[in-house]
Length: 517
Image (tube, rainbow, N blue to C red; front, side, top):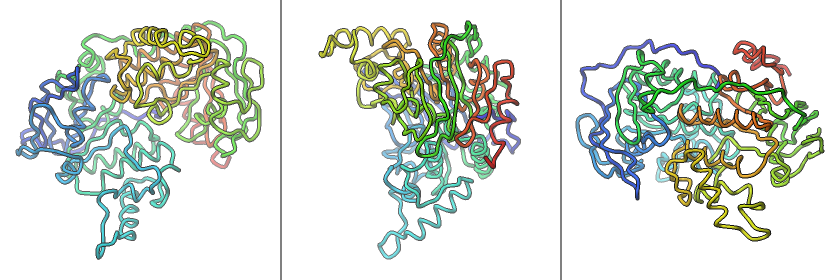
């Protein structure tokens, strides 16, 4: 995400004396062996943006899934406009004006944008689906949001950022009283984020209450009214968004004082080139005539807007995207067109940005996911036979090293929080010896504490001599965590920015220029 100006809201503030629009009273949620929420009470006023804040696994996602009707509480009550309500489904919640946009998408890839927007609520005429009305209303919603999407386009042909727009648009197909947004800007550009925030302001002026989950302090400052902090499934405190400091929030969130988020970038001199890319272009045109290199022991940033080519370049180098022209050399050997499996065996790992659909097998265990890239070597196998004991020992060791919570390596990955899912994927980089690791948006949807741990993890790898590529839409990560950076625009490298010139102004200056290129 590009830098967002942290200007506080300048709108009519919600009436503090008015009764809450939405309340939870003593909400508890138990899963087998785990209490995800423990007696949590929360309130949302009409016309306010109420931020839910906490570490991954704190209970935020569980709470909003209950409010959205996607999950039922074990105990406690939900009160809407002073009356207790029972939400047996997402449909029940939407009928009451409660709509949610979850971090993990719920789209049908083979259906069009407009079909997804009205799925389950299709308007009809004389008993037949009114497709003309669907097209017209879909266009109206997309135009209001400022999303440049064609209603007839199939979802599986959209980028992740565009799919995020469809998820957001789904929430606006009916009258709203409560809108729940879970990390809604994670895949949006700065321009698209501005559109979303402008719409949030319009909604709050109409009295809509917004429950908003984010880990980005600039967003909290810009749109938040109050912040409720959860920790380990329990309510900790509710504070004013305009006066609470970042240090105070982090201490409430973690129960401890956390130092600087970014570690010292005390890397030694860079070594020999590990990855060399020469005039590379992809068949789909996402990358055009790109040349770059990465040396051992350095962290090279790749910055740019979503779809600028920064992710697509590493996918092509890794063998996950077809190359039309140019060359890729790994440790001096031409590896152009090699498969991901061959690259992994040669010491090159790419960790994708979309952990759910590209990075992890959600319905398989932690053990299987961590070991996935190393089943051909000890301790995961002995010759042609898998070594289950060796695998379990190594995975348990890695789970402890990365502080996986809970440390249950046979539990399915889908039952973990987003931050812990990210740890499972990152653990693959420790299952064998790698010379080059590309991290694509490694901190999307993770809390401040986990973010700091991931940064230290990446820097430690570089200190050990691993060549690191950091692909990020979060500008502070590029500025504080990289030795130098390439800035991408429309599939090309706009500029290579050295360490002594890595400033926000210098990087952003190359995000939009040369539009005729």
